[in-house]
Amino acid sequence: MNTPHLHQANHVHFVGIKGVGMTALALCIQDMGKIVTGSDVADDFVTAEVLHQRGLDDIGQIDDQNVPQGTDLVVYTGAHQGANNSQVKAAESTGIRTISHAEALGELMEQKLGISVCGVGGKTSTSAMLANILEYANYKPSFVIGVGKVLNLQAPGRMTDGKHIVVEADEYAISPGVDNRPRFIYQHPEVIICTNITHDHPDIYKTIDDTKNAFTQFFDNLKPGGKLIINGDSPEARELCKDRGAIFYGSSNTNDWYVKDSFVGQGRQLVTIAHGKQEFNFMLSVPGTYNATNALAAYIAALELGVDHQTAIEGLQLFRGSKRRFEKIGEQNNCVYFDDYAHHPIEVMETLKAARAWLPLYRIVCIFQPHTYSRTKTLLNEFAAAFKYADQVIITDIYGAREQDDPTISGYQLAKTIKENRPNVTYVPKEELANHIKQIRQPYDMILTMGAGDIYKLHQQLL
Image (cartoon, rainbow, N blue to C red; front, side, top):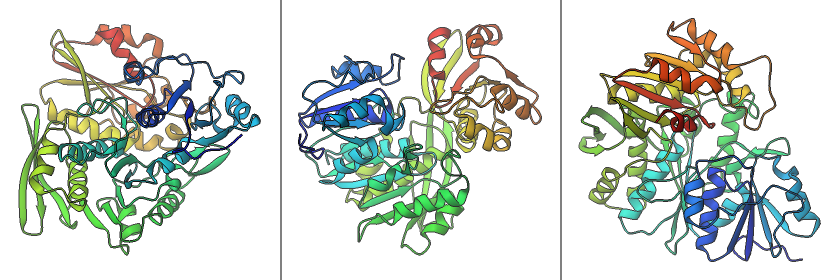
């Protein structure tokens, strides 16, 4: 049997199609006129709505007997045993080509002008902002963004005949335990945005130096004459890129471009940007200084791609956000309900700081679901200091994701460690969360769920 390149395949099957990155890629493949099928576990995912809208919700079980007839390419994710998945192995045994999501994304980008957004935190929002600017500028961009939905664009992935493609560039392993190379190693973009470099994924990168080595490899992939747009507030990112001709942005005036000031009021954020002696303002519908710097990165990239100043600003001001990124879920009895994907200590602190500025008169009740045992254990002390902007903190059980249970770390232990700094911390088992929140909530509470697992489902029980 032939083994086609992604662009030549006729029928692509996705093992683990419900994952945010896989769904975004599957939508692009469907846009190319190809047959798309998928398999996954039975659990509900944040991508359910868009998969249903696109007629991709007839999802089979991950079974070695369940490779659809006519499939000529199988794409697998790092989850579900990755390259060792039984369905992937079954496809290989019949001569069907199997590739990782990382490799498929690299092949998808080959015929486009690629803009890759990497970094520990901010990838999704920055990618979504830039895609929205390019859409507003009528560039007709393609994009692959690891989120349930970009609200303005109504999808996380799209493939068009425009020449630009905006993608997230993830530093995590291609197939953990089988191929631990960083996923973004297959991308060779013309523009790289890096939002931050810090220690994350300790199951793959034991030290910050290992993390920096991965990013160095990726920066080496930049095409000749390409542009590096780097958050200069990150010491590690600045150090790695100081001799690469990078454009530095951030909140410090040591950068080429910087957020000079921001003010929150009436559900909007007024941002002041400085570049040399020039200053200008724009409004954002999303909170936080981190989103102001994300917007600045998207603006700089848009200028580098030929978008004029006024169009780029208007595109940013129209941006309404993405699912699971400070997403307002609803209101009831003078309580407001929000959900956010933050799962690294830096992300947690910045999101809570933004929440405090966004709703200064509300009591912030943060329900945090730790993500992976290795991250919780390695960054325990950082997590202990991450919740200072919350009035009430509730820690629940660790979402293990791809990892085996580790009895040496738990949600209870995390709560105990945080409690050393903040007395208003409680551990609540996941199955008791809904009843607990119903008992303690009061008017003018902001109920904020946080984490990269399935904590967002709690709102279904609360509202």
